[in-house]
Amino acid sequence: MLTIYSDDHHLHHGRCELMDGQLMPCFEMPSRADHVLQRVKDRELGPVQAPQDFGLAPLQRIHSRDYLNFFKGAWERWTEFGQDGDLLPYTWPARTLRRVLPTSLHGQLGYYSFDGGAPITAGTWQAAYSAAQVALTAQQAIMQGANAAFALCRPPGHHAASDLMGGYCYLNNAAIAAQAFLDQGHKKVAILDVDYHHGNGTQSIFYARSDVLFTSIHGHPEAEFPFFLGYADELGEGTGEGFNFNYPLPAGCGWDRWSAALAQACQQIERYGADVIVVSLGVDTFKDDPISQFKLDSPDYLAMGARIAHLGKPTLFVMEGGYAVEEIGVNAVNVLEGFAESTQ
Image 1: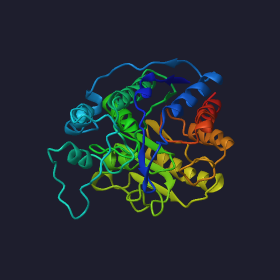
Image 2 (image 1 turned 90 degrees about the vertical axis):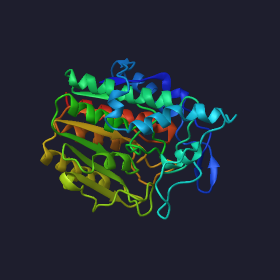
Image 3 (image 1 turned 120 degrees about the vertical axis):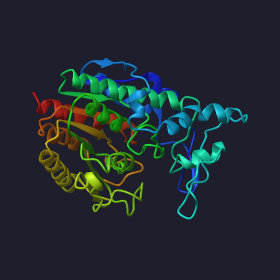
Image 4 (image 1 turned 60 degrees about the horizontal axis):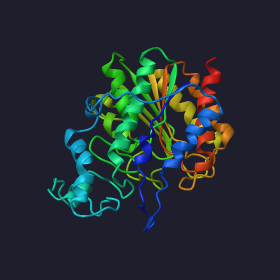
């Protein structure tokens, strides 16, 4: 299986995030992608290639121009204040406030963010831009006939909405790739999000559309981030009604219960008749993940990949979360190997 990877991800290395009432070292760190890349090489999964540059146009198909302009220029504006620490928001337009766009950098950062977990550093824009190009390059490989490809994206993307960053995510790599498939001739794209945390950004982008089916298996938002989206009764709206399926599960779930939800999600994808599948591949469902509460073990990821392969569709894997750094490479590559072994 082809892997697309860029060293640019090292340019984004946040010093801290706001969690549990304190600023603490970021769980989303460069070593995550480094471990996955090393495992890809150790297991001889297939060739590793650098991304092509498709420019801003595919990003603008998902993200608003105003948001992209803000994100691209935020660090330069921050340094004009003589600052060199991470740029993090400290206020948000909550329910009782007006959702207006201030001129202030801090006001705009709050407007375009939903949490304190997406620090902007000197290299964040370039890292996120390159991650989107990684996803687009892997998407092109499938358009050119590959049965599967792995986009080793960092930073991740599934929490990013059209004009909103948060949850370690800035640009929605999976959504950008899904839109590219549609723009290049596919009629129906299915997104399967297997990250522990609900892909709220991806859901919101496609919630009123029928050309992308969104399915997600995740920790129940009553108790888990992102809290305010990911419930089972969210089925889409307008022409998108009936094309959004969430499978929220309680803490402590192991493979038996998790795989039953996967079977239901796969049934919806089969019913939909997707031309191609995009998998938001988070492996923070692992039993030792430091910020998640499921109990999957490393061999379970082989079975996960095999079940996805049984859908029989070209499949793009896009790296999302997973924070047990020592095991992230094993678990992510197990999914890919389970998929590849089942398609031989």
